[in-house]
Length: 192
Length: 192
Image (cartoon, rainbow over all chains, first blue to last red; front, side):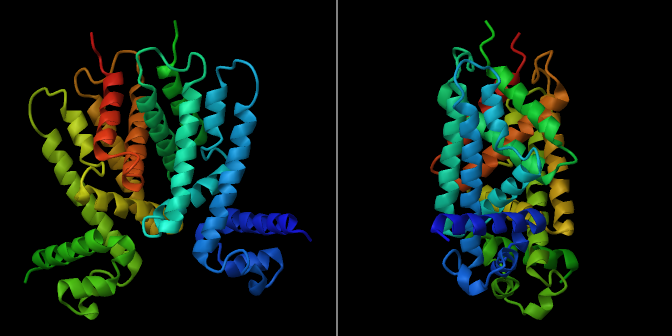
């Protein structure tokens, strides 16, 4: 089996375990069992729980990037494209909720682990750049608004909603999170 | 020594350890050493790392509530009061950064521990209520805006900025976080 196919197989096993048992349940042992392999043969991929978290977060980034790219690369003007691109990184279904939980676990662990911090910072830069891109769509930003400040503000709304929808789903259901995000983008729009 | 004085002494030891070594460094053993007492005598306060996190988060809530109350209980109209109240829960100095780190650690751990989730949910309700209160100040909300939606949106901005200022202080320094929050409140204000 080539390296890429092997990596995909391990990645799918990691993902099934994270979705089923959450980040704390995703031990190296659990992933080995899920992938039908030995712990020894997983050493190439990750030796520790933190290595596994790095692997899982890398998967989250790959998955989210691919979905966002599919939305933003469509040609032609489209006033809903920005909203749809940002929705790809909100926990609006079980898949994206699992991704948000991986991100949150990594963000907390990164406070004490510089290697995790680098991955978290890369993810933050991606998302801030996505917010800036969304605001550069024609008509997305009224004249007089500061693009850099608005990108930071949109990024705060996005991560705040992701955090709240993942941790308080009863108080902030998916539809409501989407509605708040849409209202925020609407408040910035050039409606002349 | 009475129970309240003893609790205050333990709380101060917990707080010094959290500020110095972060949440992961705040073990029961480290707190016992800091308080100049035995691990046995701390069993009354917390037996496990999660108990200690609950104790630390309870302290964070008490401290933040006291500061917010001092700001919001001042009499008379004051257009900067809402901003100043919300700034009390942003990581704009070392004290509040330590508080934000405790909150973030608890939020991540709460994904798998119902007892921690209850504490996190209580904190979330407090903050959402604070956002709603700030928007009820005279002139804080333009006619036509939906108060419940704007409270959720402000809460997302607040927690998003708290998360970013705590985890990316170089990318989002304290002054910039304050500026983005002020811009958000300004965008909602009734300027007639």
